[in-house]
Length: 78
Image (cartoon, rainbow, N blue to C red; front, side, top):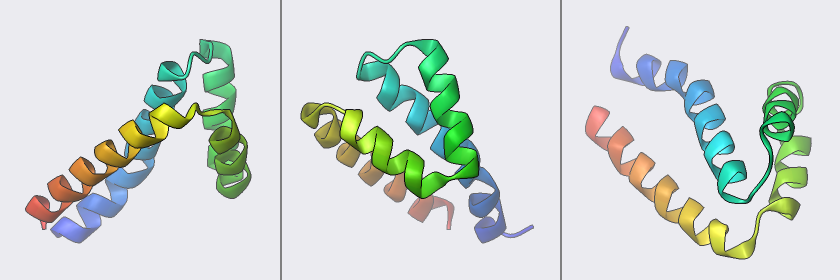
């Protein structure tokens, strides 16, 4: 398994961790977070739109920083 395959295999786990963290920061309770993660597995686009509407604007900036850091980590893995 090369690095690209490792990154591809890790993406679903990373997405769940990010989703959980973002919703937790936004003040969403644990039951709703679990439901959002399940929805994201089945219908990612729909889940993203619902979640995007619920996230407070200040957390979008935090998310952009986090995504930038993740991208940098991916580059070092490749």
